[in-house]
Amino acid sequence: MNKSKTILVTIALIALLLVPTVLAASERVYTDSASFGSSGYAVDEAVTINAKIKWADLTDNRTISVQMWNATDAVETLESYTVPYNVSSVLTPDGSVTKTYTPSTALTEDVGTYTYYIKLFSSSLQVDSDPITLVVADSQLTMSITWQDQNNDRTVEPNELVTFTGYINWAFVETTEAHSLYVNYGDGEQLLSSISVQPDRAARLSLIATDSTQPEQRQRSSL
Image 1: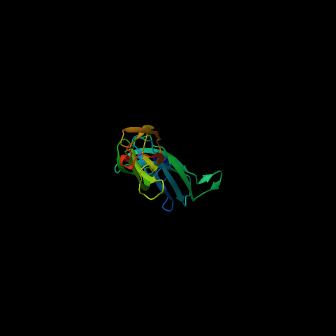
Image 2 (image 1 turned 60 degrees about the vertical axis):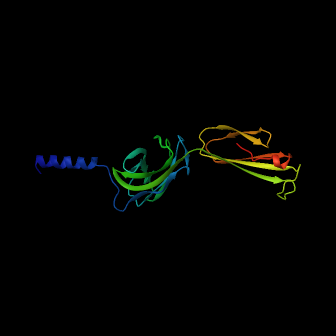
Image 3 (image 1 turned 30 degrees about the horizontal axis):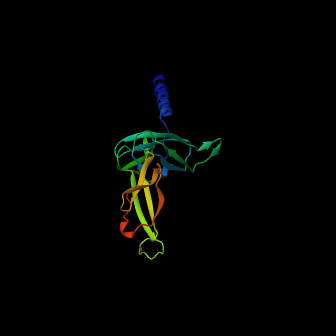
């Protein structure tokens, strides 16, 4: 082999060493499941993404780029993860790992339903894609009122005691909100209770008020 051929062979070998390894045809790395951490988020609320990554028939450690995309473009890279085929001489050609990611990109600025994709890449080649749906909702606060007369016959007699029960429900509240509940029995509004609506959860609050005024004076409570 002459000198020029030796140089060409050497360059070719170096080039092969610099090319990152990709998954062989029999190897698989994929997302077994992926979803946002909650079924819905308030405006400007931070989100999390849960993903279960599985692999099968690996023959070496593989580095996978976990990325979040919209329909056309990459939103951000969530992680560069090395799939552990060989750990301290213990070989795991098949396995799985559960991951939780907190994207730095603001995803909840506007109300609506959005579709994103969790994509896995091996050496810039896409090996899997899984759609996830994000729901961003306005804060919701509702109230319902029930009543019960003292003898449970659903007919209110003069001077009979009546119990009113109010149910306050809320969801997608981002910050603590203070509200006041008033009742009006016909002689003006009266403060019944102050309500603290807490964020990060859907909840129900029950309030009970009793009254023994004449039935024709009673009106439905208002918030």
